[in-house]
Each structure stands twice: as C-alpha cells, then as structure tokens.
Length: 143
Image 1 (cartoon, rainbow, N blue to C red):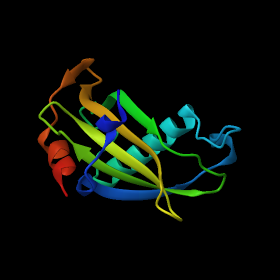
Image 2 (cartoon, rainbow, N blue to C red):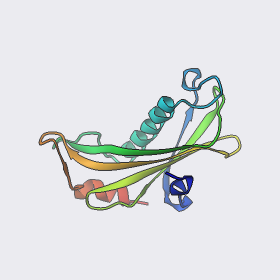
Image 3 (cartoon, rainbow, N blue to C red):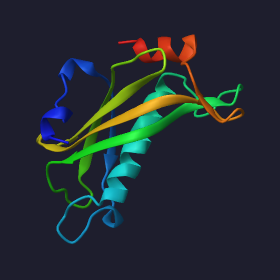
Image 4 (cartoon, rainbow, N blue to C red):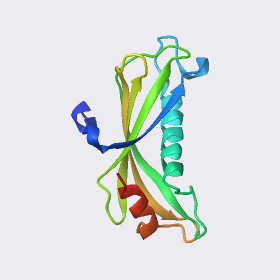
C-alpha cells in the first residue's frame, strides 16, 4: 500500500504518550525492528484504550481485536531517544474502526513512523465478530 494511505489529519489525534527507545528495540542500522515497533504501537494503543476506560476484555468476554496493521517507517532512531506517540480514531462504524498512530521524535518533532490498526469487536465466548457496544463506541468518539 502506498505511503499516501497513511497520511492523517492532525486533528484526529486525541491522545499522546511518550516512550523511550531501548537498546534491544533497534537494529544495527538504528531502525526500530518490525517486532519492536509493533510492540510499541500495541503499548500506545493499550494506553489510549485505558485512558478511555476500555478494558482489553470486558465482563461479557468482548474486546477490541486488531485484524489489520499498516506500517510506514520514516526514520531511524537512537537508543534512549524519547518518542511521542499520538493516537486517534478514524472511520468508526457500528462494527469496526481504525486506530491511527503517528510516531515522532520528542526533541525535534521529526516523523519516525505511522500506523493504522484496523479493529473489530470480538466476542471471545462465542468466537465471533460482534457490533461495538454503545459504551465502547461512545468512548472512542470522544474528542
């Protein structure tokens, strides 16, 4: 997919968190490894959901499940560099949506990576996709 598909409107971002790069998260060329970036994006996503009081799996055994991930690497990073993760929601519907994340360097604001995580609501008890409940949908729509 082209880089154009991962261009986001800055007004979509409603949450920020900062994480420091560890030595084990970069390769010899000072790029975040695919595994490390995915783990950092997952952590940013979980912090965002926690800030909205959305549990990973609720009392009804339902939770948001990422079923598609788009990534764009845009720059190298150094060990112990602080990265800003800006998180927002796009294309929210009754059944699914996209969590978008922009990763920049704290010291100069330059772009490191962009990601789009498509999610669905999954019922782990019945093992099927279900519609988003009103509580989750309302929490995700808040600006």
